[in-house]
Image (tube, rainbow, N blue to C red; front, side, top):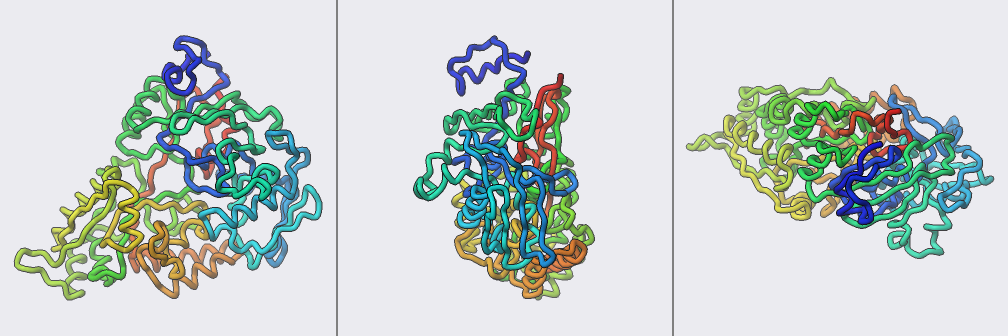
Length: 521
């Protein structure tokens, strides 16, 4: 038996006393993220997705090789013209309150996600949903939508009960069930003390026989990463997902009692990059943007500044994706080429050797993949006559306000692919998504008609090889145009007690269901 986690006595379980026995069927997960609520049908973000994927079930799951697998849907088929997808649901599935899950709940969920979810492109082609019987769902599309099956993953398509979240219960954004959710997933919601902890318990009526293995999951929230990692190292916490600090990961990898699993969550696809304001001189000249790229040693950033914990990201689609193109311009360090491009752009050095000065933005909290990288860039850019002044926003809203209103020259940014380019990539490059005051839209104000054409074509192309070719060309153009210089994959890792097995390790990492998580026998 594991020992009681004494910190829980003072925080999330007042009745618990240190020194008692901790059940083998329980796991404590540490987090620094506080979910606003648990309804992932209307809310994005990893700290909502993580509990939601275990509370709710979805039509499909995905294998480590990016292949769809049955979940609520035991089978499915797509029409020859790609305009109809039919799901055949498992019989006998029940929500946590005992009510049956039917095709009407799936229809309601799809319509709710389309109307409310921040990922607007994810279900945009869905024209209507039919329910010819309680176990059949027919989805009609305006055009073929090859991203649809991936969008049916637990992370992105929680099936929520209409009798709990439907219009009879008022506006869904204010529904009390968002904070006390009822789903059909492997774990039931038990309790949430906002900012401190939430507790999930085993769903005894889960539709997959023998699952889940655990009786309880506690997620303990910490005010800062330092205190959370100390708890992990003491053994007070069993698992911490979404650790991204190269410094912390390197230290924890030397702990024999812990496993550091970094090859997870390829579908999340987080990339750290430098975004340029392509409408602001002199960065409106592609030669200037390329010169900055050539003046920066991306391998030095990855291998030295980020301590070898963060792989290089060559382009806009994360390397773990089957749609990634590694054969794009590498912008290897070349100060001579950088100087030549700046000369060609007519930007001669002044008496002080400086051609021009620009500002580099990040937040004060973004240290390892923000401030430290900008300080390195300041030194490098001076070698080719570019002055760089750092501007550290005191908080995220300040930074987001500057970037979304185009009040910047270049900025450090971290943006996620979310599985398929239609969901998380297109938003950054489509001319139609240049939307003032909307962060993580096309804040670079980048516009290339050919890129728009390629992305629109790829969004409807159902032939995998042809679709890959379209995205390959898109990546080559974007890397050459350099509205963004791609630095590294954010090394989201799950660190856990060596005696745990079944830690979510597929393409969605810790935002996948935890029904296989358990202690070694």
